[in-house]
Length: 333
Image (cartoon, rainbow, N blue to C red; front, side):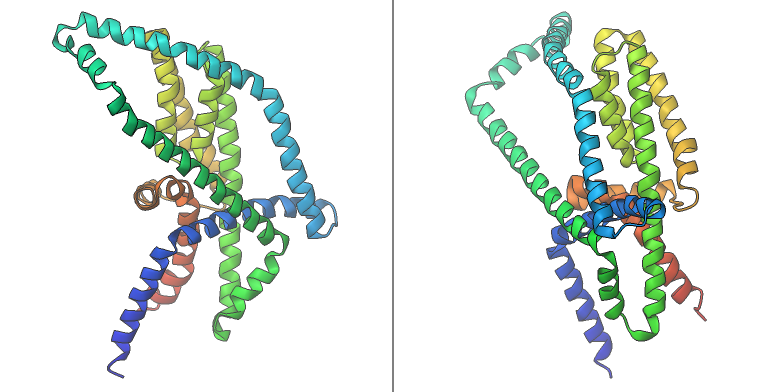
């Protein structure tokens, strides 16, 4: 009896070490769950209108998403390629502006010479190694995304069997509560995905339209980045604003101020009006909790952790409310 606390502590330590060693496997698994929930939302939309078996609905969803991606690529790819070429042509302009600033500033007059001396072959080699390492990391990320997508399709094909497996390994007195917990997690995660997808799409369209009206170069690339980084609240939109600001600054400071005002307006519209309206029935995350989760998982797991921080926080919030608060804290004598 006296050894039970020690045994429990050792078990927790062993589980923590095992979890840390398998963190990438667990991260891929959770990413697959997020994708499968997104597929399940679309499948249920189809089944609510047409009485079809789940495999047929899944085929319809995957085919529709593929066709949608092909159509969007066909419509946007020519302009995207043109803007990438435009981005390449802007680099010499930036370099010339930097040279002009350096030559006109006497305090940093020796900077050009020092930069020229540093860009020899011996100093470029480590940079090349870093680029190769970055390319390898990107390829590894694509492989992980492919594996997560494959697992997500398998999960979406038969979610009931996986739910039964989780419920069956739960102690009998808690099986009803486990089923309710899974339902609540699925509802919260599905609501978050739906709301953030609509929010990100709206920000993409509004940013593209506004930057085009302001005649800012690379409007499509900037809008794509702003839309995608909407899935990373607080940090993402602020970082995404730097791209159109930098491009506008190369044209004129006045244009940069106009872009800054427009992006600040869009960020406040998305953060305080659009997203809260879309998520009011499913998710209620405090900004401080979301920011701490992003910083923590970003520091521990890098970009994948940063991207999955919010959906993981949504699930953990449901688990905390249902298990920790109601079963432990509320019953504390």
